[in-house]
Amino acid sequence: MRLMDKVFMMVLMICMAMGPWVVQHAHSSNDLADTPFFSGMPSHSVIEAADKDFDTYRFCLGKIPEVVEGKVWRKLYNLKEGAKQPSDLQITRNYANAVRNMGGTVLFEGDKWQCVDYNACGRILTGKVAKGGKELWVEVTPCNEGFDYWLTVVEREGMQQAVTANDLLTALNKDGRVSLYINFDTGKSSIKLDSQGIIQQMVELMNQNLDLKLTVEGHTDNVGKPEANKLLSEQRAKAVVQALVKEGIDQKRLKPVGYGQEKPVADNSTPEGRAKNRRVELVK
Image (cartoon, rainbow, N blue to C red):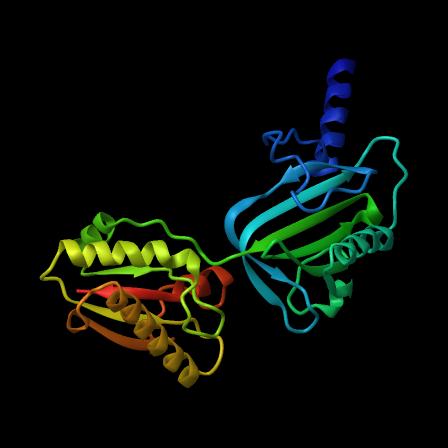
């Protein structure tokens, strides 16, 4: 093998051994910016991002995790060339101070072995901040003795669904039913303001199709006792019917019923599956 070929092969092997740190990440400059709420350590810069408009994230609180839904910012920070490498403790303690300075609370700070079924490098910080009417959750997980770390921020909110009356009618005519993700207060039947748009589209559907009669089904995930879930699903179905009646829809055209966790449409073992199972269905 020629000398140049040997050099090329050696460089290639070194790059492969270094793994993702030498990969050119195809993210936009916006992806590689700090989160809107927390900046990175001065010694580090963002090299990778996995932001989502809506997703779930499992935050470590010790033995019992908290699954939070909403807009997710997830950034991987890497030590800048020539910068002094901080310790894992220094990184998490900086973010703990930032959380407290924003009026928030540090919910967990410790090692990954203290968290049940959790994948992290070593040390973990979990915090929560109430800001501008929003609930922010933050997690910091340093790796490689502070050479890099993940910062995850979730702005908590329910699943958003944009539908029109025509969408609803098309689904009903095709399948005889349609699933809606109406956001309720946790453990209650109060419909949140961000779901009023869905209610209005249901009103429009009923007003445009005067012969249409619907069963309004409430469904939950499998978290909690089955009896309590069934009662909650009934209360939520009734709340949707009451919201429609309040807008002038004849109550005789609507029948509320609750099935609780009896009819899942997704795997309850995952946060994403549980989110899909917490739904209201309109049935012809």
